[in-house]
Length: 255
Image 1: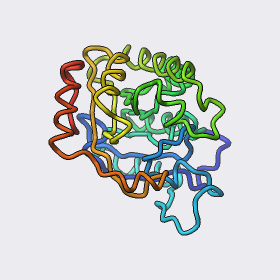
Image 2: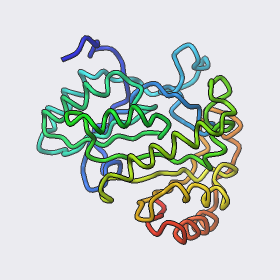
Image 3: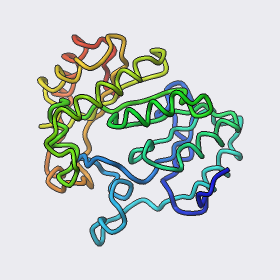
């Protein structure tokens, strides 16, 4: 199947989820490794390398791909989908191995991606053996703000606005080519990162029939500790932002 070690800790297994794969009861596997550094990210153990994780930081214990496969075999006929997330799964060498095995077992595949790797996404989509059945793409903030607020100061693309606007548009086009019921875009309502102005900018990327799912920000265990001191939007404030998003993309909603 592969030269990869399937018994090496690789990601976090969520055995059952009813919310991560629309219309399906699924399992989820959150793979380690990411190419961006969202300051509000709470999956520190997945995003950072082992040497980067601050001493004393509590992280989720990692499962192996072999454990994932055993779970999928055991739950055949009960689960119908597998969500491959991260981190950023398009970077991870285990992703194609997992997709092939899960498809052999009859599972539908959902990929969660941050939208910054359109060439890798295109390669996956164009390979019939690896083509996901559902794609969810994150939209973090205005495309012009990625290069300073999202990518991380150590990135070679730090400050390169043109790069992020280009790759995000390319990824949106790839996802938009899927049937409307097999794709969605997702945004976390982070105060300071997602304002009314940012929503207007993000909406310009999306097709009119987009399913745009918003989630409330959790100020816990953030990659940038200063974000732990940022209070989430109130229910009223969040509702106002969603109502505004609906005027631009009717399929916007708070999940």
